[in-house]
Length: 328
Image 1: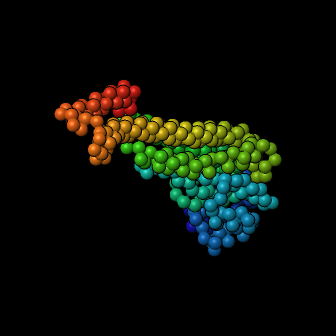
Image 2 (image 1 turned 60 degrees about the horizontal axis):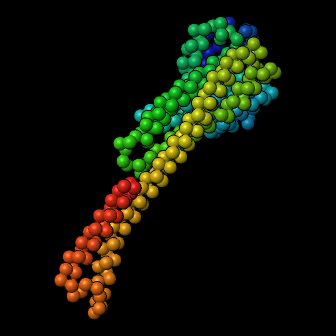
Image 3 (image 1 turned 30 degrees about the vertical axis):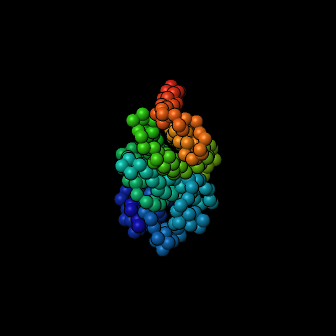
């Protein structure tokens, strides 16, 4: 579905009909210092065939744009530049990171954006660019820069939200008042899955962004290199935050497992101590229950209370010993 189609001349929008993008492209190329920005949302193969034919898009790039599920990348073809971005959103209520996909085709006087999923920043980017004609008049490069900048800024925002939630998880895991630890490991692993989803969006983008900062990339003005360098710096901050989150989660998991091991050792000591306390009277009673005729104190009047007193004395001594050593 075509969402928006417009020709921009000297940084200002000239309205054009979405269904006539072929005429709009001819007009943009004829007028000079103009370009067409066509926005498409989850197109079908039939819908995109006309677009790809009109703009001369490479079949491999068209296939990637239709199928989606691509890693962030930058590919250069004869007549166009193809870039894949993965915007991310964090649902704080559900504690989940969701990624969508955004493809850009840059060529001679045109930029085509293909959006999959919800939550992409294209509408806001277009509105912001239309209010800054000084940037927009740089052509399709300005659109590539603005979209990349918006996506990376989202990364930084999501990283900040994840950091807050991670601190809350850390406090909860190591709270002295927490007694039920059965689902802690599951919580940590679930959080690591969300961080992994985040890393799949940020880490592969480092290499394409580095290429955009270098000279000689077709359809990208050399004057835009400092702007992409700024985006690259922000991306580095985001990737470092993601790596820090992942390391901290691993440390929390290791500390939790060590904590569980210590608690299990404490429980085993307590069980062993109580077993030892139960073994003493069981052993003595078992000996006297073997029904032999000749046994000590069988004919002594105070034999029964004496054996009970010995049992109690041994039990008290063992109890005090275990208590002093912290086993009980």
